[in-house]
Amino acid sequence: MPRRNRPKRTAEPTPPGGHGWARAESAADGEWLVRTVSGAATTKTYRCPGCDHEIRPGTPHVVAWPAAEYGSVEDRRHWHQGCWSARGRRGPTSRRW
Image (cartoon, rainbow, N blue to C red; front, side):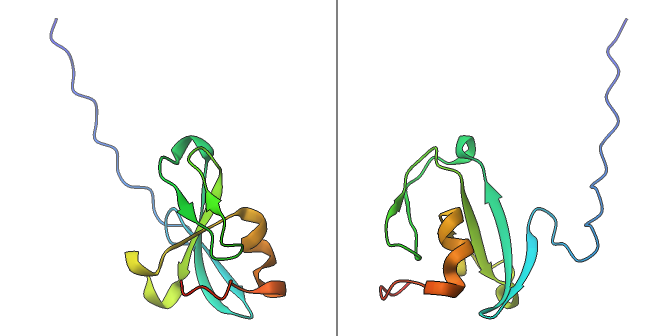
């Protein structure tokens, strides 16, 4: 008996106020789109703008970019979760990010 093709999945609608896989956050420093990245999904080393330390492969972290620049790869920054949460208290390092 021949195999049946599986029906094509339709894309799930974007939740209200959301941007698909990213969530919107509003803070004193502006509107941000934020995505949480699991440790299993990380394969590169990034530099956190909050503490200027490396985010090593396998480390869960947050990717954030300004909401006004939705889709701009150049504006995405990878942050440690704690640094992202504390950015209002200490801000980014003096290093240009």
